[in-house]
Image 1: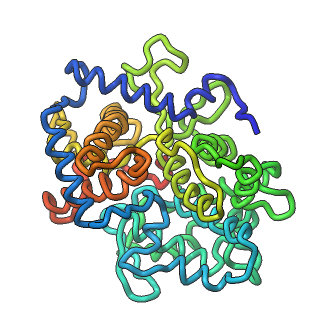
Image 2: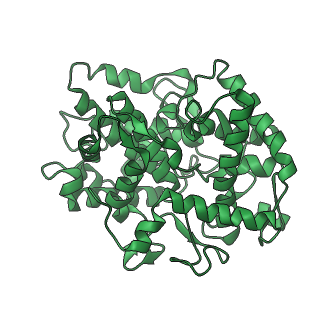
Image 3: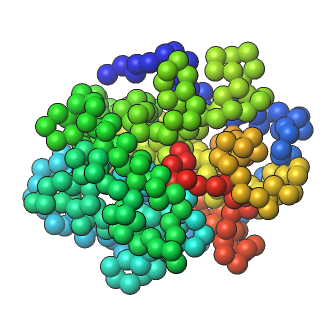
Length: 410
């Protein structure tokens, strides 16, 4: 299935465009020509050493999984998805894969910043925060049929259930209260309803009888060749099929751009001048779905065509270890909107620096990109190291910059 849309919109959905525009901003940083951050490349050696130490601590045998939503479902060493999957023993593998697509897509979309106060107490009494809490809350809501309109088949996601999901019901499932506020609850509920409407409106992607995200598995499985399926195809399908879901911020030629932002120095004179794409959640979703496809016997090819993820743990690692420094330290004491030029700049530098970090980490571990793709560097890795240094520097483990979340930051 060919990717459709205006050529500039299609370009802005390609990981090669993400990478090239972020690398161009990094090149400006090397010339000390960016408005918000200075680059201190001599610190990269220390960052790489810190990440390698974190990898060896977490994965001493270097058996590192992908940076995927499935890791959060196992927070605290509990294989929660495995417990659910055991109840599906005997069903066709393709149907289990559809259910996993259903779950991963909803859980990733619900992963925008939870806020510093929110906590989730799981069915076993374990208290979790941030991404782990959101992931387990999503999984347990899925297990209880929140996203299914069929009481006899709760372990699925369908348009009918999503279209009727309001903030009160979602908040109850996520234990939201005045004393335990989940940031952006209204936005999250609206996002789920948007997803339901998108499923209903596109039977070619999601099926006609009971539209569900798992319909995308059938499309990708049909496109796979004996060698496998390119990772870029997963992302392209997600960005096209889920385009109506993204909040309406920037549009171009009548099409919603999603996680694409203005930066005054981006792509001068090029198509989409001044625009930097990231598609962070869509790429994380792609990594998560790649794992499902591989478990279903479909190899995913060229995973490193996708980029690193520009979020606050990876970006925080570079700030906390001094590789990047704010020109105006006062910004660290403010809550900044996701479209603030400093946040766009920070995210772009994070994407470009993750590629350089991956090379340095592989060199230290004696592994090549095939053995240690970027998805494993992130997991092992830069994301874990970003959390580790944040906890060492700040009692609450908060990131060095605060991004205001409305529950829909992609």
